[in-house]
Image (cartoon, rainbow, N blue to C red; front, side):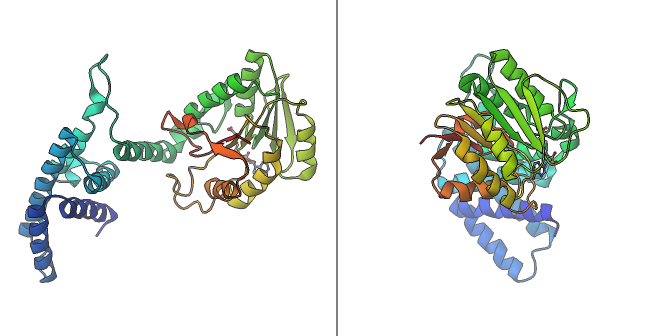
Length: 330
Ligand SMILES: C[S@@+](CC[C@H](N)C(=O)[O-])C[C@H]1O[C@@H](n2cnc3c(N)ncnc32)[C@H](O)[C@@H]1O
């Protein structure tokens, strides 16, 4: 069985099992037949599809009337996941496709009408699938993103949030670990220039080729966790000023943990520390990455370091830093 078939079968079973009792009884009968070795016949497959379609029609009706309990929600979430993961639509029974489509109805209000957000469980499935699409076709998305002709590995929705944080905080210093080509550092320098305050320092083990120059921008070459570099950076913070720290270098758990230890103490109350690329290792992208920024962040937050996740920074749904915008609150 291919992984697609598996997914579809799981969704189908989930729906049938969780929904109406008649459909559940029919599934049980079919399962019994399957144990007796007759599952593979087209007749049984068709019957199962028909059962699923029946259950899904019931589900669609419940969506429309807003009558969904947690079991329906769980079934629907699996369905949507399966549907969106495994387009084309013919991979699922027609009823499934219709139910999924109807769950999106609230998004298609005419202009000017109040828009009904989809229920949170559907919204999150859509968000995660879009996130995977964005992340995994990297050559046309985050690896093809430019600021004033300089490449940056930033997601545009995150760049907008950075702009808002800079406007709001007016930081005396922005500290970026991981320069790459310097595109993000140049962007930050320009934003600081616009508000007429602050400087940005960026550190990388590799010197960027042709680094963009800006009067508010300083480059350091070396490891972000080298104590000498950390000390030099700390000395650049104007007395009592807000600080914005952005951790975007080596994304392994151990390195991010070491960066958190080095840089969190430089962030005063009310300022922010951003742990970048918490989305890898299956949160929800790059499932094979291994423990990374999210895991380091969890360990860090478990020690109660005085930070809170600012969920408002994730309001555009797409962020490469889920749970990564940390505000110092004490
Ligand atoms: C994701 S890129 C940075 C992207 C950049 N901030 C941007 O948005 O365009 C990660 C960078 O971290 C650098 N790096 C890896 N290990 C590092 C370390 N220990 N200290 C500092 N930089 C490191 C790599 O050389 C690479 O250029």
